[in-house]
Length: 261
Image (cartoon, rainbow, N blue to C red):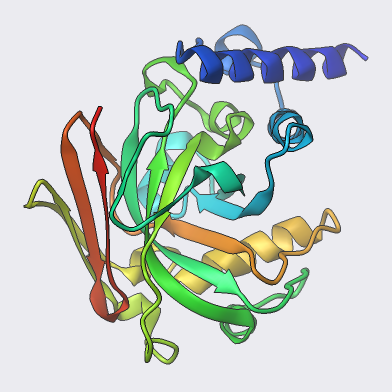
């Protein structure tokens, strides 16, 4: 019972931080004994609170897909969070989402045409179940003060989710090797990061397979029509006011957004 109380208390604290835009100290400072299972339980409580108030789950995000981020947080596998309908923007949008300390990551997004249920999902099964892929910008954010996060903190905080921007679907991209699609990431016209799809676990579809298999252990499928953000191709870049962000990912095309504040 005490464990459940701690989970509810942290869920309420994270919701309050999001509402007021006043970040809180890391969960792991006050409760270093928190487990990864409890962190996901906190995440689920926050998501459930929002869905009860009319939000809809439209997909998932995979995080910690790079070696550098995994080493920084002392883990050897990714994590995941939920994508809700109010978090979604189209390319070219002006971002008015209530953010606290945003950073942007360029990613490849998968849109599924049929369900995926693990275990046993492989990257080629992911590709066969994918309707199309598009370039995306994930705006990550943290309700934890100064981004002083450990794995438990980011998982509880919905994998440090903010909002996301999807590019336009282009024809003729189905047979592309996503691992070889090069990235050019710019802020106000200046290139700040480059990379390639292979930075995401060797191939972005591996991240989606990991997610399908991880959720499959809980009996939860990835559903047709859902959006899956597969993980950042480059390092996240902090965003300031009056910034135009653009990412071109090979033949997948370009996605961009403007941050006024």
